[in-house]
Amino acid sequence: MASKSQQKDAGKPREKLPWAPRKKRESLADEPQAGTSPRRFQRFWTFWEARSVWQRRVLAVMAFLVAWPIVGTLIYGVIPPPVSNLMVFRLFTGNGIHKDWVSLDEMSPYLAASVVSSEDARFCTHHGVDWVEFQNVIDDAMDDGEGPSRGASTISMQTAKNLFLWEGRGPLGAIRKGLEMPLALYMDALWTKRRMIEVYLNIVEWAPGVYGAEAAAQFHFKKPASKLSRREAALLAAVLPNPIKRKAGKPSRGVRLIAGIIERRARGMGPYLTCLDRKNWL
Image (cartoon, helix red, strand yellow):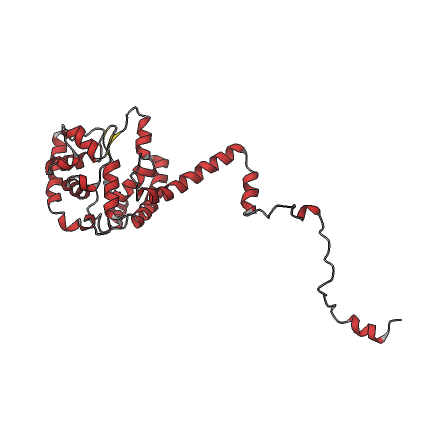
């Protein structure tokens, strides 16, 4: 029979002494190996090691496609892009790559004014996406007519598409549009407007295999981009929607009419192009 002192102690919780021995591990597999540290991101590595070789390759390509525009935007904010996705894809059509990077200061000021007035009149006021024009396109699509007759693509969106994405319609085009808008917002947040138009004018296609203002000026008018007249700048802007069929050097009647409208608009664009002025820190 237990003593009275033992009966009192039976109801109290046992105090854990600091020198009390720990319980042994249930299995040796839980014990870390000598000279190694616990693996970081264990769930990720477990998932990765469970994939097949081809699944890993597909995942690696997808990760690159997501990461490259983010990193590339930072890089191309400082250095000229050597090529764009559009240039690479056009190589498969048999066209070469003719380009020559020049700064915005080495281009005729009429060119930026003509392109902005033609492609994106609110370029200096929006932040990558022109929500006013985007709403207009949505309204057109909701009408009972034949659907939208215009696009809402800004210069920022076109730069994102040419530099990092792809062309095309259908399902792939819808996926591209879904990527184009956030990427344009991201690029516009990091780059100045001056840098955006400078990159765009250096990578856009102005004839099959002819990219950038300098190559276009030499190809169509046999002169440097810095010497372009108002009319020549307007003709170049007029062919941008379809540089494969339209020719600035030998314009059709339709191209000449469009160029005339662009030239008149560009004359009044001065107050709307202040974002392209060189700042003291640029």
